[in-house]
Amino acid sequence: MIAVYLAHPYGGDENNVEDAKQMVKRLVKKFPETVFLSPLQATGFLYTEIPYIVGMEMCLEMLSRCDELLLCSDYQGGSWQESKGCCMEYAAAKIADKPIYSISSELNLSPIFSPLREQLGGRNLEGKKL
Image 1: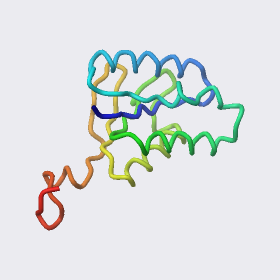
Image 2: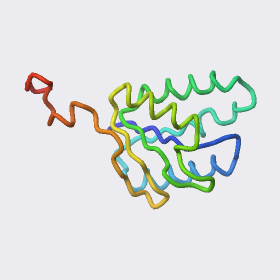
Image 3: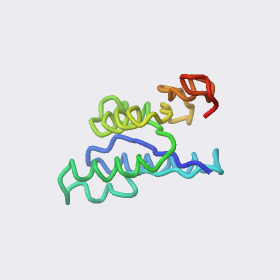
C-alpha cells in the first residue's frame, strides 16, 4: 500500500477543508489500496494557532513520509500554483524525487514530475537495476 499526500490550497478558508475532505472520500473509493493524507484535515485547525512556517514544517514532515504528491489543479478559489503552501510542497516533493501529479476535481491525474529512477526505467545512471 502506498501513501499519497493531497495538497490543496487553504488560506484559512474552511470551504477548502471541506473540498479536500470530499476529494479524499472520492479518492479512497477510486483507489482502495492507497492511503491518502490531507494536511487540511490533520493540521488545518491550527492555522490561526501557530506560526505559518511551523504549520508548513508539519505539512512537509507528513509529505516526507508519503510516496507521492497530488496537487489540486482546480478548486473553488483557483489552482495550486496560487498557493504558497502548495508551491512549498511541490518543491519539497521534487527535491525528494517523489512522483508529482496534478489532480482535477473530476479526479483526473496528470503527471507533473517523474523521479529520475522512473525516467531510467527502474535503473540507475550506470544501468543497474534499482
